[in-house]
Image (cartoon, rainbow, N blue to C red; front, top):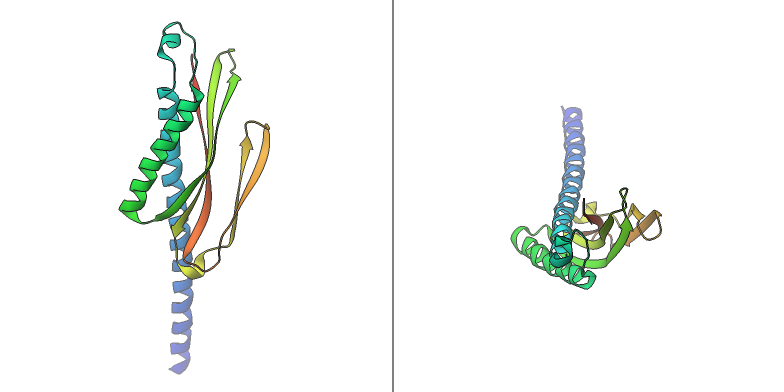
Amino acid sequence: MGNRTIWTVILAFIAMILINFYSSTMRETMAVNEIQGIMDQAGVIALREAVDDTDLRDEELSLNESLAVTRFTEIMNEKLNLKMANNGLITSWELENVKIYTRRGQSNNLEYYLDSTISANFSNMPNMDRNHRSIQYTDLELGRQVTKDVNDTENDGESGILVHSVSRLTLR
């Protein structure tokens, strides 16, 4: 009888560890998806609002780049701060960089790219947060794969993540 109880306790303990790990992974995925969705939406809105409508009527695409960056930052402040107040998943965030790139597309049309990276913290269970994460993405300026790292304090109940987004505006 005692042998069966020990195995039951061991199995219950293993199940708790697996549930804890799954919950932590799902929270991280939700945090990344929420932030990336907001970044994508903010990027498209900022690019569209910065287009010079007079040039657009002449079928030329021109953009006020400083207005696009400013508007992107405003939208991110508004949306992410609201998200932090409402759900408590995201505890803090910081805009790492926002860059605007201009390129010629396949049909020789001018294209604008808004490239942004955000570091964020989300609440997690203290024993499940990792102290090092990295993401890989293609840097438009360099034209090659880049790895960015975030170092986090281990076992503090918060996990740090990096989220990268690129929004594109083109005239067809």
